[in-house]
Image (cartoon, rainbow, N blue to C red; front, side, top):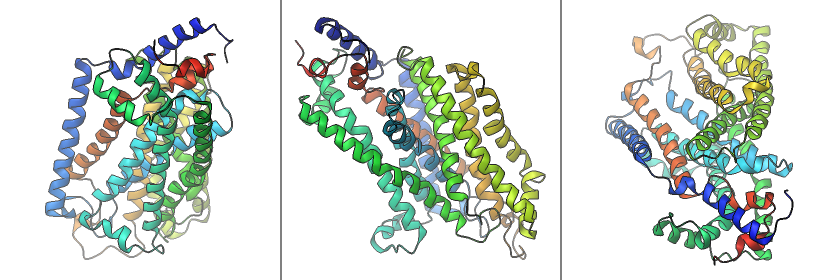
Amino acid sequence: MDKVKSPEESRKLLDKITFDLTRSIVKRDEFTNFWYFLLIIFALVGLWGWGIQIRDGLGVTGMRDYVSWGMYIANFVFFVAVSLIGFLISSALHLLKIKWSKVISRVAEQVAIAAVALAGIIIVTDMGRPDRFLNVFLHGRFASPIIWDVTVVTTYLTISVLLYYLPLIPDLALLRDKGTDDIPQWKRNIYRILALGWKGHAEQYKLIAHAMRILMILIIPVGLSIHTVTSWLFAATLRSGWDTTIFGPYFVAGAFVAGVAAVIIVMFLYRTRYGLKDYFEDYHFNMMGKLFVLVCLVYLYFNINEFLVPGYKMKTAESIHLSNLFTGKYSTMFWATQFFGLLLPITLMVNKYFRKPVPITIISVFVLIASWFKRYIIVIPTLEHPFLPVQNVPENFQHYAPTSIEIMITVFSFMAALLIITVLAKMFPVITIWEYAEEKGISREIISEPKK
């Protein structure tokens, strides 16, 4: 924490911090309008494709009797993976009292909320009769792993929203009372409602801290469960490629890699777009880079483990599966994901230069793309090689290729996730104002005092 300042200096510094961190809220130009237009148009195109799928059935997709999980489930696993970053940054690092994570925590929660919300929507798009989704809640049986997944996804989304909202309350009160004149009145009205009458009393801060600590502890088992349960949907089968006991920690490690990459990209976009170079500092990117290397190394270990053990035993089905990945149809995709998603990032980010904002953001883009293709590789090749011979079926039943409808709905999912993140950034500060002000030595009394 910085040294204690005089009240007048503290007020001036608080005004500057408030002005800077509300830039995302008040900035509206032609690029903003174009960005909204782009996201909404692509999302509507995807919804149109979903309407065609509901009307004509899942036959409009590339999924058939053998490959019954296609691009949709790859999307689901990807979004669940990205959402896990909220647990890592906002909970684990906070409980370990790692101070640099505070600046990043709200970005991590934005990414987590958008990702887990779309994970739930993607499951519905994969259903031939989405109107029957309510039956999962009304008549579901906990003997079914699907119920486990729905339960943990819903719970994780709820806790993530609370972890985002609770530390936002003092900021909402601050913007309600002392926000810049550029903030529209309708937003101030929303802030007044959501602030819940916050006055900045010591008891209120204590209550927020207590509630946050409970949520940070609760989200740890829920966060681990959301991706562990997802891995069980695969591992609870006898299929080669899925029949393994390491899928739980393997999925969790991979989730941290994808989530860290997503947060770094969003951090860089905020830093560039809203002029937050003094807040998302080179130091934060450097520390995120070190965290990135750590989770990549853990994930690399599980990747080696995933293929070394079945490769050593080399059962017939495993031999076909591994050959298909290493030298067959999916070999290009497989080796590209390993190289651009793990080996190259680890090699580069060991060097401090590549942990600077621009290089690490470029690396994160490649890692995030590779993470999606990794999920595609987990889902599709295994389904194309069942134990029983594929015979007496049309040729298109034997192979899978996503159709234009699946691609449209996939684009919708990404555009919808970006739209959620954009709306949150335009409605609320992307960094917690009151926590950042406290780090700079500004007292809570000055933060909470009425505007003169």
